[in-house]
Length: 244
Image (cartoon, rainbow, N blue to C red; front, side, top):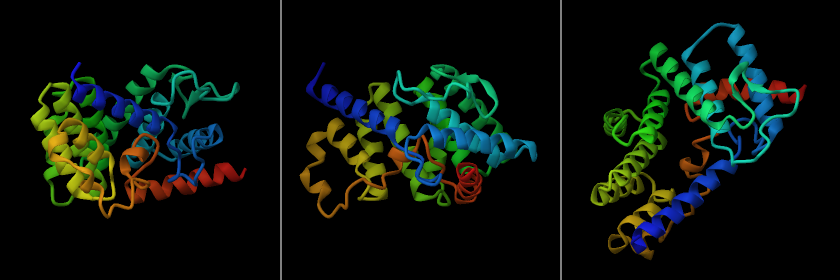
């Protein structure tokens, strides 16, 4: 394996581990806690009784995706809560099934509201992770759309860069990571990946003036909702469950 490949893989492993322990900051700061996940689960059960919606399906999908990417061996649920949001396919140590349910929920959200960009992004991202070629067109459209929020443009570019690397297209991967890095200089995940895939074009000066990656959307992607209207609804519902 080349030095570049070794460096990239180490960084990616570190990033995904970081994502695994990233918390539920958007959901009242229950960072990585089982209590937060369970409150989220219970809130979704009650939300579902009020009727189906794209917002509900997006919130369900993010919860399943969060569970699917928790570190292996971590206890996800307390003994009396064997499933999430009433979905018996996403249970203790069933990471693969949780990922499948997440993708289904994102597809359901897009079907109900095709204008919900975050649901489209997450669905395309899930498909591109399964197969680097799948979802690429949707991710590109999301990145190029002038109405896409910066956080989602950044994430779309990162997914496209990752998919390009998986296809062994180092030049295209570097190009996408460069585009992601240009969205916001304070989000340094893209810069780390750019440095790993194309060290000759990214130097230490790339980080000059950066405040660091504390708010980098990549870290919040698995366990946080970005769409304000959905995030606020979910936060309010989860908060009520936590206060019980």
